[in-house]
Image (tube, rainbow, N blue to C red; front, side):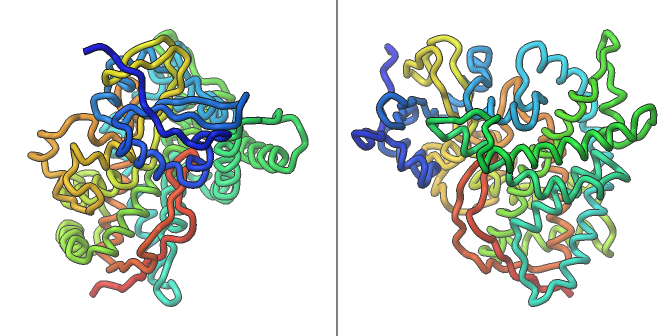
Length: 449
């Protein structure tokens, strides 16, 4: 069958789909798939500044972009360039020889055996969080804020060891500023030079400088000292030719690990708690599993992960409905065909876990929360790219086992100790670098036993 030209929403005469994409991009993507099919062409912006991009919604198309045709789809779009300029050229943004060199150096630090050793940090931070929740006035917390704090403290403890406290406050302050800055610049048809002294540029520059100072100070204090935290292991990592990461590269890897390592897990845990708070039957089953496996109040270990299959399914279903990376961008180096549709050279292409993981051809009643979708039998029958919250292909997330370990063990500790109820039953979504909530995600806490 010959390739066809992608259809798309007509939008407004002067602005195309710009207003829909600015007001609620995730809803715009869902509506576009429903109305125009699995590859949709968007046109947005005023005349003279109008941009086009292609949204790919089918599992087959996602597999082509991320895996089978991955060499043709590069991280060269505006969004990745803004992340690169803000956080550095770490594993998330690097390409070609830089990426391959970094991956070879970093990969040994994320083997399953090495990651399982991080369970002790997860257990310590989970216990500290549960203890703090016991002292919470009125028994109501904002899950989004709490899970962001928990995930950041956990990844910072793994990265920095004893220096964790020196980094936490700066990172918690700086990351939201820089996330908003990156998103605003990426979506703007006119990007002023970063050197101009606008309020936004000055605020972002101050946040970036604060992050660099705290990372550089910790790295400098470690010079010549051996340590078994992730930063120490990164500093000691050597390639086949003996090459190492220099101080700037170390900082860039640390910033990317902090960004990707806490925001993805925080999002998954936030929505797992929110969904369980709205579905008491599934919560009771998950809590019973947690109490049976972690009986007697003992801390979790990596070996417990295999004994928590229902909690794992809960997390996977939360990630299906609310993937931390709701869209993944690439740029086509050469003209090609994706899912039977022509993609021109130089076109920006989005694959959208948020849309694909709600695709009615692959998910029955897709808006319903149902952890049983992830039994081994049902997973085996499903297309590999019907669920891909960690991406796929050669650029799949290197930290996906760590994210699942932290999420499942952390959730197990919290559900062993507390019953949760959803105070905010509806949550407004937006997205910057990752999926974000527009407002609180409050949950009520009731101490078990």
